[in-house]
Image (cartoon, rainbow, N blue to C red):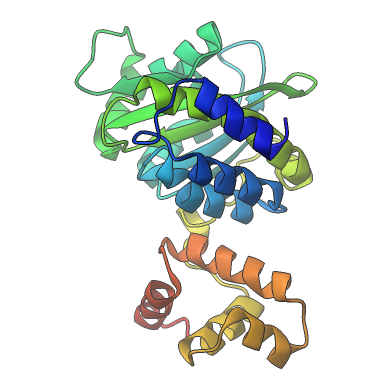
Length: 268
């Protein structure tokens, strides 16, 4: 589906402009088409998707399809508490969440919030979720992206239950997420059966490469991406991707916050 077709489909889905901005949807689809790394995807989800589905945390989970007890293959998270991710390290905890189970059963985005405990949720998962402070979650994804593998997109801390138009927009966006994931599958697959590093969360939180620190130092000095690219003799897109990775790793929303966070942590 082309971007223009997606925009038309969004309008046909009955999403009034006061609920879903078609321009915001097209911006999301365009950004997803430029995703080349997991950090790119986390950045796009954290920023571009907010206009359509506001959320406070996100996790991408790759796991074997089929049995609900299959082990998680890889997890990439942004602003997801470590105590909740610990459940994913042990077993396929995301598949046991009511939101994920609803999506798997109905092929529709599933939603769960702590106020609705009557879902027969797994007791261990519910305890960990309650402690995490995530409050609620929405799950959807792509089945069989590779033989026997399922990708789940999990959104947390939504302002409230997603309305119909948000669910429709998310379903329309799924093919664009699908193709973005296809481009980053090598990065996901290379994690083998272990848990992937978590950009912006977990043990690698705040860890910047030497080149990212150099870029951030130039940002601190007020240089634009184009100026940094010229100074370093690299492509503009290279610097743009590095800045996006920095924002994800430091769990911040903009360049000024990145500089402040890095100074506070002694990274620059």
